[in-house]
Length: 114
Length: 108
Image 1 (cartoon, chains in turn brown, orange):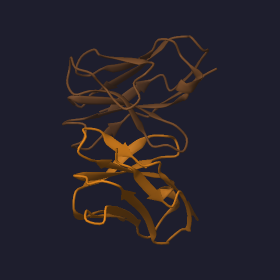
Image 2 (image 1 turned 135 degrees about the vertical axis):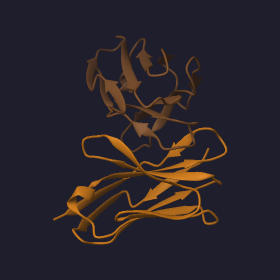
Image 3 (image 1 turned 180 degrees about the horizontal axis):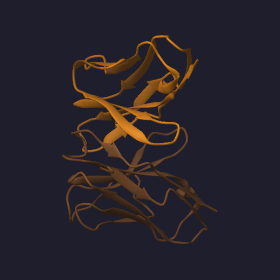
Image 4 (image 1 turned 45 degrees about the vertical axis):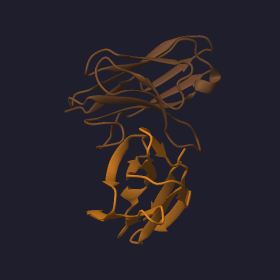
């Protein structure tokens, strides 16, 4: 049982490049989330998906797009990376709504934009 | 927006000491989470509580809804407890609001 798996773990981009962070969970959870973590700040929600086929903006969605490909997978895309998007990104999932139930996190993806 | 403040930001303790980490929030909530972030970066959920107290092994979490305050206690601390501890609250909005974390270092 792998839980929540994120790839890649590390990535360096140049400004303007694009990339996709992949996330998959094997716990049959309905809800999935993408957060970013910056030094001195709490985790901030970028986008979430309450169920397959639906996505909603979180607190800091600008510069990102998401796709809920199926119940297992939720990807985060940076179309034109900017230095302000240098951060550690976490995918998470839970079985019920965002604010109910235990959250399960991936190991994180460290992104540097030069 | 709910503001979540954790204290202290950094805490160093000797092995065996009793540790308390505090979390205060600004508006009413229906639940509060305590999370642990390992030195390698992974995050695990420790507790979710809406009232009273929960205990798991050497960890105890309490919440006082009226005072808008929660504490996480670690008894008989051990170097393997060294991690960042994060408080998150669920308010009237759908989203969780996270504190910035408390870095705990337990020295042998």
